[in-house]
Length: 112
Image 1 (cartoon, rainbow, N blue to C red):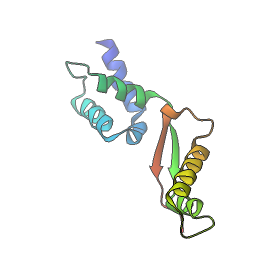
Image 2: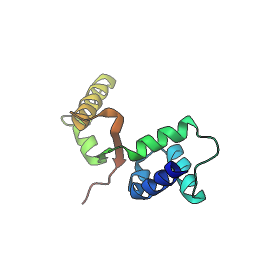
Image 3: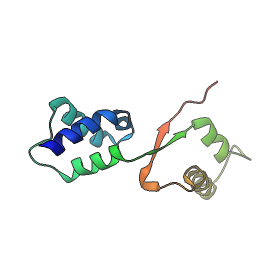
Image 4: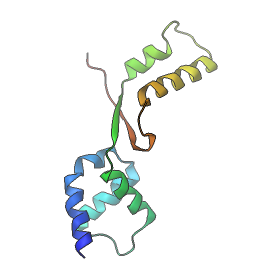
């Protein structure tokens, strides 16, 4: 139908967002694109994948060097509770003021 065509056209417009979805969501949508149509049965997973691909995602780069220097800011040896606290502080700093349902983290190598 007409709404199916609209979804397929919009999927092309939002194609860049597909890389930020979970691997299962990505597979579902790439299948729809490949087939050029929606499946006979519209699953909850498909609806969720479409909602996520069409939402304005907040992409946050996770840099291993930055994470390590935050966790080991004052010592090369820390205990579990310090690790937990610093990970939580780092995580909260990254997502402050953002809609958590739209946040996606990407691994980003530090530029040397």
